[in-house]
Image 1 (cartoon, one colour):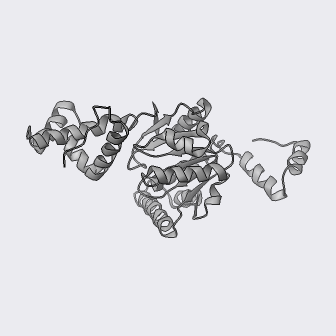
Image 2 (tube, one colour):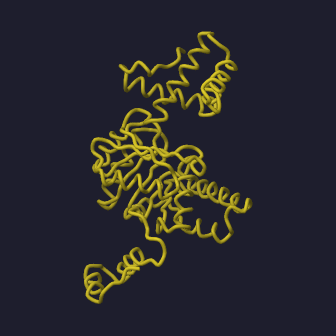
Image 3 (cartoon, one colour):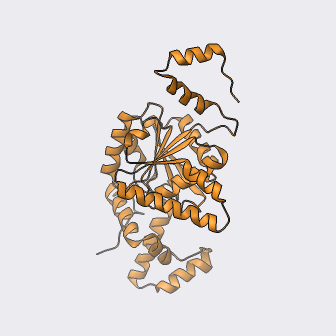
Length: 304
């Protein structure tokens, strides 16, 4: 436990605008439990399919291990905020019903999250993980705004699965404090998280992000800002090739899928997986890559 000398207290009080500011500072630095991480106050933008899972996962370790003092969950629309809160609550209630959480632990988890439509609540966060719609123009505008409003130390992280981390980093105005953090669905269950760096990323920021992923109970893998990172860069072209094989009439859906299951040890065949991921999602990702990287022969789309 950290102890403040009388001289330190006087100095802090002199440098804060009010005693409440000092008390806030003291609360963040005095703890009799496990020390918080480098990213004490976490912001989550977007509470949809991925975002609510990220917020819940972070709140779980915040309540249990004091990794975060608080989590700010932001949606610009009250309807989506309520929907995200309900998703988390239902997921937590299910854990309680299965006796994986006690009621008091569930209450502590939910108590770590502040749900808000006020973006200014993100201003003093230490790390912001964004999980909004996969639209580069919207993301660039968001990061441009955040770069101007958040404290200089705030690190930004996008949960994009296919868009350029570098472009978003440049838009933020603080590219050295920008990383990619790609979770997999469902976030609460899937262990893998891809951590992506650009040519601008500060090595310390990157190392702290990898450490944070470990602190929230996930397995981090490191990657440069290549299209699709590791998993999707290898996976999506494979799924498209299976579709092309079917289109050419080389084999049936059943035979393609069973071949990759029994011959390559995959848990499900590529066409089954493509349907699970969403054919529209596969098409969206590949069309974007074909447009952005026309010389890459691995990136192709089906003929219409």
